[in-house]
Length: 271
Image (cartoon, rainbow, N blue to C red; front, side, top):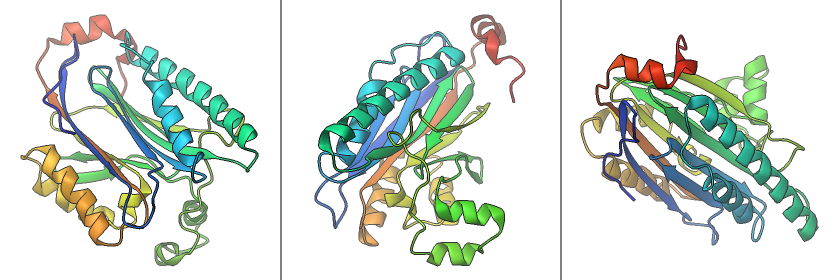
């Protein structure tokens, strides 16, 4: 789907949003789920694991919980609502796993939260959030995987990581621990910032440098065709996993600074 520019009430930012999810070329079940709520300042991708009646349930449970977030009063409120729903989804996934009696099930999550001119990315697992600012692509999230942990300690090289048969073994997911185990990065928005949220079904087939080229080339065009092309290319290159992409472009609409400071004082001074 591709939406028009949406400007939440009182926000200095308007958002163009598009998303696409595909089962891929090999699997018969799509265990990915996406959520797009520019009116609330919330977008996410969830990639379930566990197979039929498990992985799809896990990712859908996260999205279903987030559908009750509603319109927040500010950044702190949105983060609080998000984590409250994620905690409930975590419990529901664990309860379903107990009912099935077939082992642990779970889902990654990669979420973008925006209020006023600040953003927060919250994630667990190896679904990712990227930000394109000007000509620079930044991977905002850091994979929770065995291979990333080895890279962080210097135990393996980047080349060894790319060739590792365990590069997709994740170390965190929603539904596998008593409480959600997430990381968060926050920052200030700039005009024309473009965010890409995706499951590993996309990044399996794209190096960061190639994603940067695609986003830079399409910087002045509609997001819809770019999103479609990313998914199409992943399928053409094998598509062995489900592929999900959510894209968000931010446009500053020029509200007076006093409106930002007066309504969202908790954001003052954040970088």
